[in-house]
Image (tube, rainbow, N blue to C red):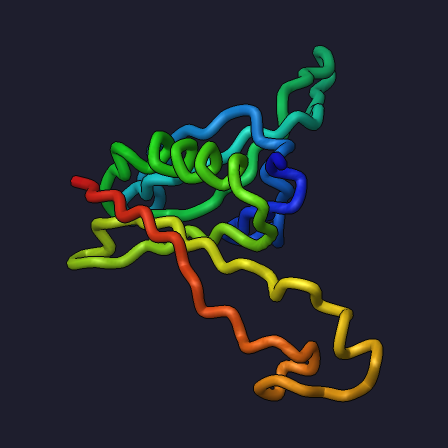
Length: 151
């Protein structure tokens, strides 16, 4: 078991594999053009990223924004880490989806949407049994929810 079959949806960069995450944090963006700053929950990945100027080159870990909230998501990094730790002990595969909700976009939760099990068994036989998803198994609706209050 592990996290090599778990993916995390980012805000704008698609999916990242959970076993590549080496850090989870939150920070506030600066206010620009009269707009208030936002709070970002980010994942640091075990991938080097560089940027440079005329003075030199700077290497750091690649960071990806997972979610943006209007108020500080104080417990979001710990809750995502807790969910990933729990998923690492289970025999599952799927996507962790960060969700901002609540009054004034003041809460963050992390939903887990598992992939269908045995995706190819009946589909490859061409019998199409099941509920129309083509793999002979009922559609999966299970979700593991971790709600994080913020603010």
